[in-house]
Length: 218
Image (cartoon, rainbow, N blue to C red; front, side, top):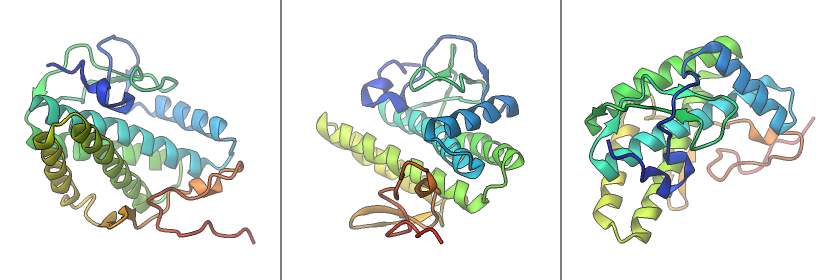
């Protein structure tokens, strides 16, 4: 597959053909990632760390799949992807010999095949809300779409931009994402909060947050 250009869109869309790493759904690797995210955010609230970690991984997988579908007409089978939980995009995901799948497989292969077990593993490690995690996935998809569509328009690839919109709309019809948020004049607005406002350094609310203002401490 011709995946080398995905990183041109942005680092979240790329991956490397190098080998090594952990299976994506490894509980030990995810536990390490959650701990690392908590350290970077300066929080000992494991729910915040787990939420942000899950959203980051979901964003990576959805960005790669959506970008590949638009740019190549295929998506890579991400089931065998190897992961460096301490790495950063695009080098954190490693897929030496990607096998192609049709774009129609994004929902079964990525949403149901990867994000569902990742959701389950995350919740087995940290007691975080299921609705929150799926809200994170919806937010990640909306963010990936925004970056990809903007890039397509800047490159004069209008048809590709429309294709990205159509693919994302189809994914938001999936029962897993259908109730995660709505598209308004100001963009996607989610129905749950990712808890980022609880970051001690003053994370504030995200641009698509359901909360207009962070809750005040009691």
